[in-house]
Image (cartoon, rainbow, N blue to C red; front, side, top):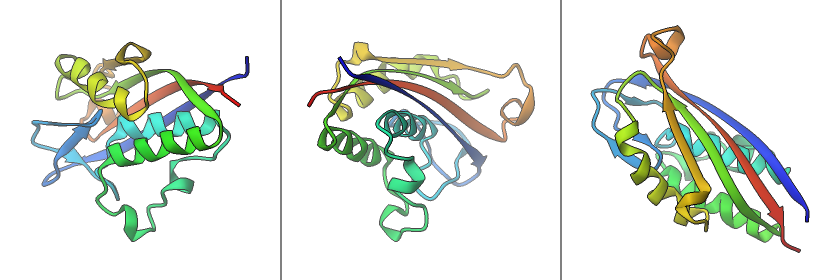
Amino acid sequence: MNIRIGMGYDVHRLVADRPLYIGGIRLEHQLGLLGHSDADVLIHAICDALLGAANLRDIGFQFPDTSAEFKGIDSKILLRRTTDLLHSNGYRIGNIDATVCAERPKLNPHIEQMKQTLAPLMDVDPEAVSLKATTTERLGFTGREEGVSAYAVALIEKTV
């Protein structure tokens, strides 16, 4: 069996007048994440973990923020394209383990909906998607509510 792991990290600034998307769902909050796409920090970290595991560079290489094609794009589309890219290179996704760091809004009530949203995009069972939320105990840029970050680890398996 040929298995590989990858690690991803992403961060986006919180700003006014933007919707907040995390884990493929829109959350009610007075601030949203700033980015070229919808800035879904969790999906971006997962994409980087998957791409890294397959040695396919990173999200910025595959979906550059200099391209008009990706301006304002729904990050769920990027995750689906990442999954398709892995499949075309002979990989299937085993599991994801990810953590989002945010002071507010509280994410724990939304974890199950995020899992149900993300799993089909990766062709995996929701039980293969472990999501966690934490704060930074009011320390750093996250604690000051200036931004949100996410970490992800992915396990993939070569199928051919």
